[in-house]
Image (cartoon, rainbow, N blue to C red; front, side, top):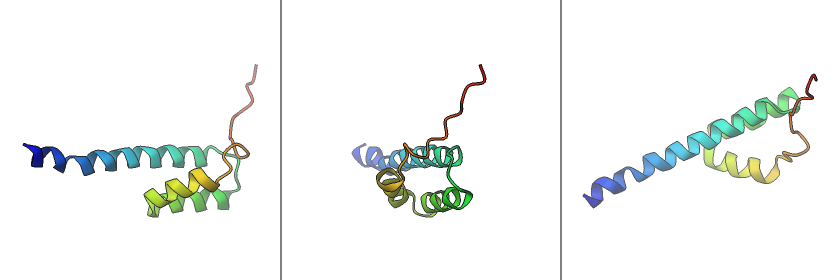
Length: 73
């Protein structure tokens, strides 16, 4: 029973990392960065998911490149 429960731990952790990677890639694509910056961050997170997440949250300057839109009304 315990062995069966421990075998799902990696799958759950992998799912959490996948969800965080998708959030980061979505945030990068919707940011106001240059195309090369978007491509660089997206490829870093795609090829190195855990390291890319850590580097993105530490060094990406998210507030400066926030891609919020101005409302029409």
